[in-house]
Length: 214
Image 1 (cartoon, helix red, strand yellow):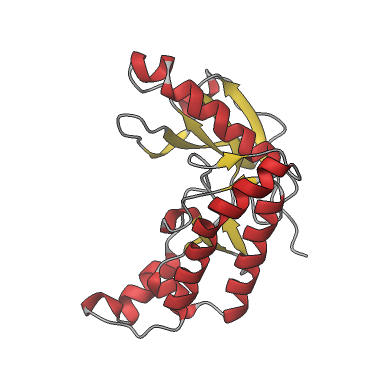
Image 2: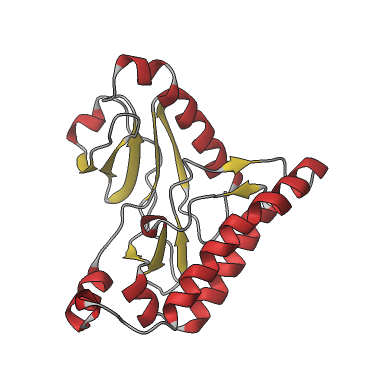
């Protein structure tokens, strides 16, 4: 098994975030995403603090709290970056996990066994009581540097007590959304390229792309 990257021993303080590298700026009700390092270990931070006072007081706090619950529920899941910790009520940090965003062109270049591993990763996630609901978004699934799937961004996820009757019913009802996303990516792996963007140049550019791992 490949060695996991170093993990910062703690989340950054609010003051330390001032020196973090901004990866993407959020919109009206979405967090900024930044990269932060401590002692050579890298983490990714999702932060609602730059949003409006209304979002900070309501949606930002609620989403931050809810998403952290999903990361904690998936502790030890090999396909999920490790949770580092909370910055405050509006931000938290997780492990940086590099890889290529899963897209049509990347899927066509990915070995068939990747999709079996992705399917197994989703099944394990469901067994933990978590339903992702947004795996169709190409930024939320990576082909990791070791060729293994990486699941990101649990901002839309629902979390249930694993093993409970309610969890079993909820996962049975909602889990098809995640499973259909896996089927979509698998279908792209066997589809023929089409259009001017499907040539080798576009494919190689997609392969080199790296997603923010949250």
